[in-house]
Length: 372
Image (tube, rainbow, N blue to C red; front, side, top):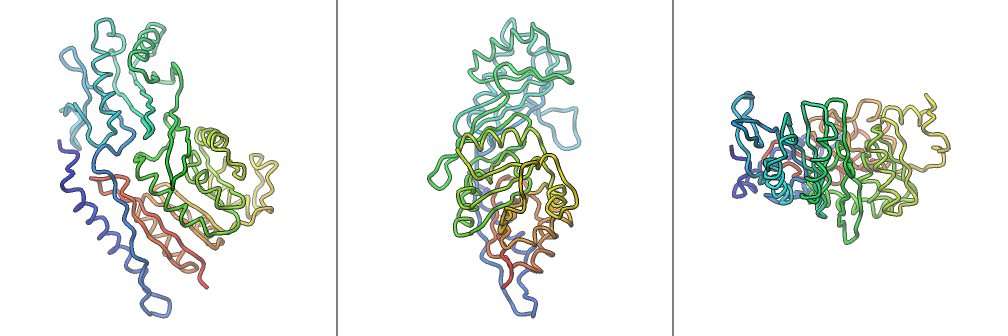
């Protein structure tokens, strides 16, 4: 099973670039029919190896031993033994070997028994978290053995089973990103969403900061996660309001606001649909108690929606802002949303960020401004 081929990386990226240029070529026609070419596509390449900061593996048991396993599509019974994982960070590759060797040591049978998955979360700054997942409930004997393993490995371990989560030390990592010469610190919680390609995340944040620097007024961000964008962009706006529905992500975002000493950013635990309803006065939310939405001068919005893209109401709401920074993990739904957004806004910048090398997935960034 071949996962990477660095020699082919550039040609694969070129194919992605060509696909985006072809798929979005219809946006180069102005309303009056004259040619108005899209801005030159900005292409941000990934490292060809060791770019992925998180990974998960099935654990396969056979002949008294276990190993990391992957499967060809449609084949769940004939595993491919994974001894290294070139797309994953060097730290993940190191910990894969150390963890497997440790659980095979005499006396660690309880750690191996009925384990079916292992997950790794690492950072560019050298932190790591390991999750061991079981088809059995975890008892005090397991905890004692896991604590010894944690001391041996040197990074925190979490045990999971059905309706059970055992945290031995902590359930998060702290990432430090260097963006345009400035350091930002982020808590990334186990099970919460984080950008998998840390190097590409830095490039994406730097791109958004460059766009934001000359803009005035206030920023509203939908789908903010752990505050990845809003924390880094806050210094370029008077005030920032960000929304996120996941309680885990909101808690991490609050930590990140404090950690980075950001004093003009508020996180509201609302979905994008709920936030639109609040802005329109359709509904009142206790979660917005003490926040005066009328005091904001929202001139810019940043949206980073799931693969389904923006719903119709959110698209209409987004059209109400002078500036739109749209981060998309699905070019198809981005294309659909742009069909409406370009009725009122012009595309000023268009970028692709190769978050997922060697796959068909493409991450895009689009900056739009209201038509004159």
